[in-house]
Length: 188
Image (cartoon, rainbow, N blue to C red; front, top):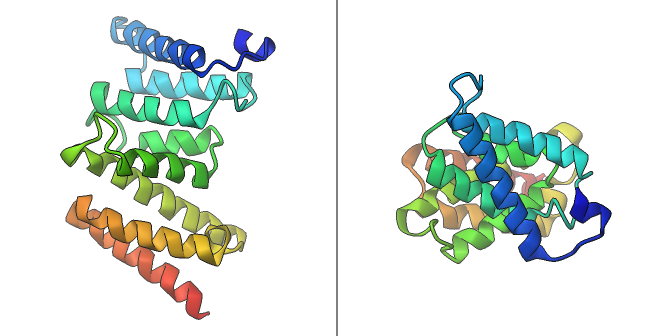
């Protein structure tokens, strides 16, 4: 909050502070037998609180910093713990737009950012598919243009096709269904 008040724009400082906050939160809860939460749950609580305190600031609540950091935390320290989609659900809950989440995750997936290389890319692919599906549902619920425009819808369909190779068969089925829904929207 000090960075926000001081209008501090150094991404390295902001990133280091977030990393320290995540590490401290994890260690505090992990070492306390009476915590009442798992570490990943404490991270969710902390992120919700900080999103509100920082008023979703572009400087101090930057998705380009936090999305990779939370994804890395989940993979390295909480893999297989908690709900399957707790990370993308958190990202959506704290108010990051679907498009921003997909763009950041897509960049990580394309660039094989460690530790998301080789078979671990599947985690990013699963999260992209999940967010695209949530985005689709939001567009249908709110009766808005699918993914914001026909061009975006086509790009999402192509991206989903590329991701299929990294997914488990059950997720490949989800991708195929979502791509069919997207393609049907062009015929209407």
